[in-house]
Amino acid sequence: MNLRSVFGLVLWSMIGFFSFALLMGTFYTIDEGERGVVLSYGKFEKIADAGLHFKIPMVNKVVKIPVRTTTGTLDKVFAYSSDQQPADITVSITLAVSESGVGELYQQFKNLDNAYQLAVIPLVKQELKTVFGQYTALRAVQQREKLNIDVEVAVEKILQPYPYLILRGVQIENIDYSKAYEQTIEDRMKAEVEVERYKQNLEREKVEAQIAITRAQAEAAAKVKFAEGEAKAIALRAQAEAQAIREKSEALKENPNIIALMQAEKWNGQLPSTMLPNGAVPMLTVPKQ
Image (tube, rainbow, N blue to C red; front, side):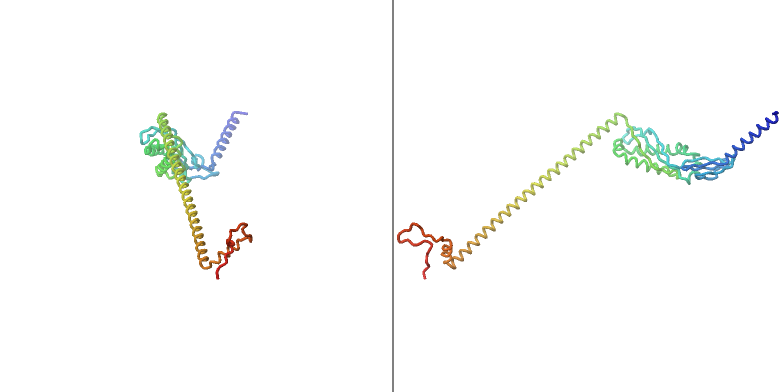
């Protein structure tokens, strides 16, 4: 093989290689969870959705922007509470990029990392310090959930100039005070727990005392009712007996022979074994005509 043949082979190999590379550069893919910013000579042209797409080599460039929800964490953001207690706060931010705002994000920041570094992180730090500064150190611990909500509302408001950044949530992961102050907070919270327990015990004792009083009053009332019932029963029996006696007296007055009849009904038919001279036969009084 002569020199000319070798040169021709190398030349055609290079042409084939560059042709293949050029052909491979005419298409690209966009995954789910991201969108492509298509540039033409460096100028924004369009947004490419997920799937297979074609481009003109050396003319078009594609920048992929994630639109799935992502979470970033800020470690040890230094801030002061309203009572001038220093703290290191760890906070996480969950964001997503709206599909319709991918182009605007690229035009402002080129990519999502720049958006985080240049906009999201500084603004979150700013609002975190502002909101935390409205809480005392103890209140920030006791009302952690409210503090979290206040920070999220503030961050959502401050991100309004960037409508393509969708805030999914802000979470305060940790608040670190100095060791001495953390011990002070712990002691204070223990004291408050003891006070609360004492109050609960006092309330329970009050309730138990009230229950005992109510029970005693109920028992006393029941005894009074029982005594009143007994007294009424005795009075009714006495009235009934008195009424019976009156009725008997009236009957005897109207008919004296009733006594003799009652004596005869009770007599067993036997005479006394001993009788006095000239004595009358007992229980056989014959009324005069």
